[in-house]
Length: 408
Image (cartoon, rainbow, N blue to C red; front, side, top):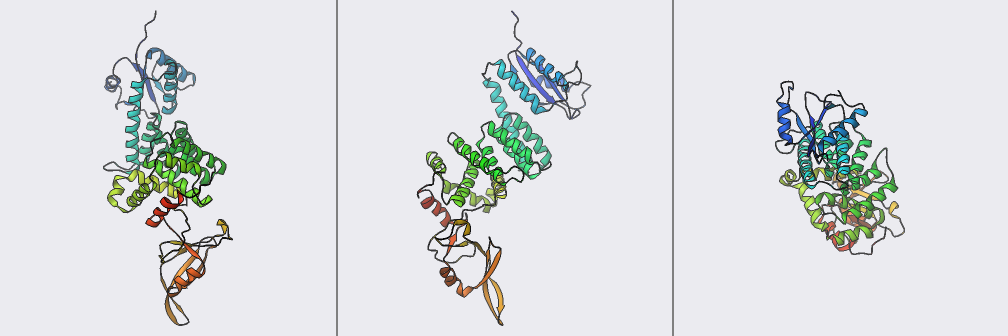
């Protein structure tokens, strides 16, 4: 009976050999082996551990991995352990082999180490991307680090990689790569990636697909039912609510049920979100969350819910107004932006006027300050509140979540 050789398969990188991976085995501590290899007189720079995986029979595992890569033409020399392979493909090969070895059982100890390393790399990559604390902002390094985090199975890393490729930070803009990383995240169970796929399916230049958008949102809501609701996930849930209210005039039954079942306090989230944008200290503490909120806002031009509020009490030039008519459909209702006061001379008399900008028709109209209340009343204008208005928050709490819900 042949005894099994327990140990680790390791994958190493070396800055002196940027396009090569060293793939080997050890029955001892991996870092002890790395130290030995790095101290070799023939190596100018130390090796860095990119990945490791425990095997009950590391000898056989190494043999299979080497042979597989050799057949693909990626082995530099048949007598050496250096391969011209992508790190992602090698890790995938190792994990598939581990899956088969365990007969569909995953080694918990190794998985715990892998999960910890993935989280560590995610934090490092985000810090490099945003320049958090003492970390130097470096998009290219962030891209490398986040790819490693993704290879270690960290789901959130795929979302950050999608942002890098969408914005072209540290690499060329690439919508295909944006979608690919989000699909990788979604397939790994990351509901945040699913939400971003929904948004991109609505606003992408190359891959717009409204039907896919609806399907992704349903998958997102289904996923939320088994997830701990974090601020990151609330970013996407709030965006969905904005879309539903603007498109249907109310929140869908599925969305409302998720909010109720998960006991989600939207008001607290939105208040916290508003504070983040105003308080510089909160900005620093919550920069990754704030960055994601800004990214979603930039991705989708719907940044507030257009709510018709009856019986406004006073004019406020920071709010929006819309013509109200039961005979008109939502598409025919005019959204109006009212600018700051301007001084205009009419018939030799200088007076203060408000400028009404009609968003849909791109036209303007000037109304005297003294006539504003009468004008709004005569034309049946109603306020449309932004997210920064407390009345808006109260309206969501007291009206949107309690009124009859459309089943979508």
